Image 1 (tube, rainbow, N blue to C red):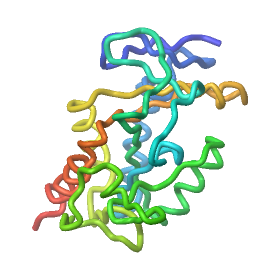
Image 2: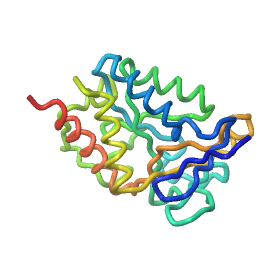
Image 3: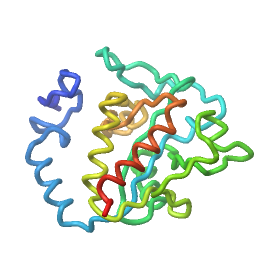
Image 4: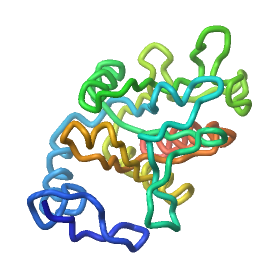
Length: 216
């Protein structure tokens, strides 16, 4: 299989391998078609945050199969979950929980929605990360649907959120040996390595970005 000829935002050659010259993330035709496709779909839905289940444990342990590429390194290293969490921000025009289940089946890993108000046993994420105030309120978060409701410009909102997170925290390419062993691409892109103490900022960023596009 050929290595993608695309260049990442860090100025390095993309590591994804496939049958063509470019992977789906760098193929200009795919990107144009994706934008065109999204423009024809309903423009409202939910923005949601999810992560790997084991990263929400009180004292998560390092897993050798979960590796991340540091911004200033060419080598992948086991992710250290002591002070950071890996999150992914997605969008859906349907049920958030259904979409997360689809990702779980596809990736074959237990993934969960990162809900700022949800309690896990007797500990909430608010307590676990020691950074979120129980008084915090978000204009667009729906606790029943487990996502930030976006009434218009859904695709643009998601893309802008990704760009903002990338500017602040960098792009977290994750190498998953488990997926690679099952014959799939072991490289997952558009994950973000976030300091646990900064998780509140991510929720606020999502909420205020939706404000930008839905203000009257």
